[in-house]
Amino acid sequence: MSDYIPVEVIVEILKRLPVKSLLRFRSVCKSWNSVICDPSFISTHLQASLSNNTPFLLLSYRRNGNESFVLHYDNDGFEEFKQLQFPAFGCASYSLLLGSFNGLIYLQFWKGDVSKFLLWNPSIQKCISFPRPIISDDVQINFGFGFDSITNDYKLVIIGLEKDDAWIKPFLFSLNENCWKRVNAIPPDYTFDPGEISVPFVNGAVHWIGYQKRNNVGFTKVILGFDLSAEEFFEISLPESLIGLGPMDLSTMKYGESSIAVLKRDPGNEHELWVMKEYGVVGSWTKVLTLTLHRQWFPNILGFRKNGEVLVQLDYGKLASLDLNCQQMELHGVEVTTNLISLEGSYVESLVLLDKVIDVHYMSL
Image 1 (cartoon, rainbow, N blue to C red):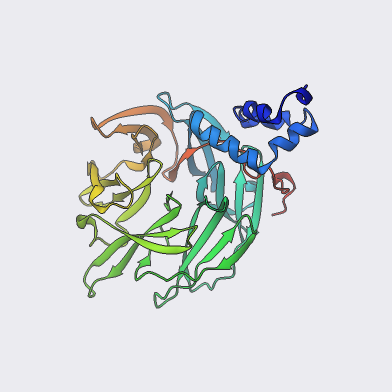
Image 2: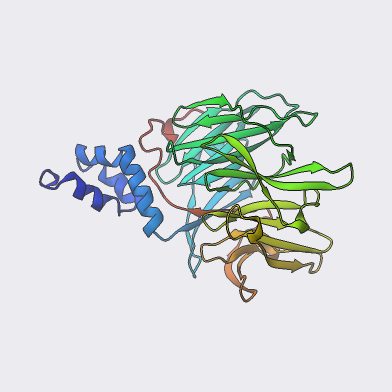
């Protein structure tokens, strides 16, 4: 029947279908399989999904020493959609989530003493593993993952500091080129916390907290950005009240689809949440939340939902949403029996990696 339907019409129909249906429809005929696996259709379907589908929230947490992933509908009900199962996790002794974007999840994992990176699409059960570049154990490193919209490429960047706080040339992995390279970016005058886990990808760049000692008394802090297309660093100033805090007092997160937020943690006093309402405009920093100490315990702020509410983890692992306008919390009836939980933000099922030949079931770890 498809012989009598223009390809353009077929594409318009298929791009509106969920990933699960498209995987089945690959077996309808060779022409449909060719359309669905074409890189241009994969991109078209992704854009349609981002525009029309109800978004999911990707929650990750550790259970029995392994990383677990759960998708929840980002709506009023906050119902669980499904748990993501990846058989290769059982072969890894430890895994670390580095980021998620366009339906892909980036991880670093260990099998014994061997460390590799994994780019995984759970919707189609495909992934790519690649080795970590050789870096001295004396170098402190951190990671950032994102998408280069100019070259339609997914990239992982590794930044590093030697013992004397001298920067090494960053390492950059390109999925399109399937290789690592060194980047001749001018290093900033700041160092970073190698333990920082939240590295938001916004507006084509990944972001860390950068700091420098100030005459051996206190610190000066900024947000460090690395543009994945231009392959260069830049700086974003913080609100005046946050500039002099210590290295471990701040963390970054994504705010909406195009900006960033900063969480100030002060265990002896109060937490503050600041958002940059207009990306790159220092004057748009706004404090939207203050949490005071309550019975020696703070709610764990996980991140923002699509409606602007903040998802928090309460005592005993309960999850709730906080409306910043009325400062009211709503429990979701979801409990996670661990304190190690993170929100990776909006998630969309996609076909990304479908045109690659490596399948998770045949991948050797």
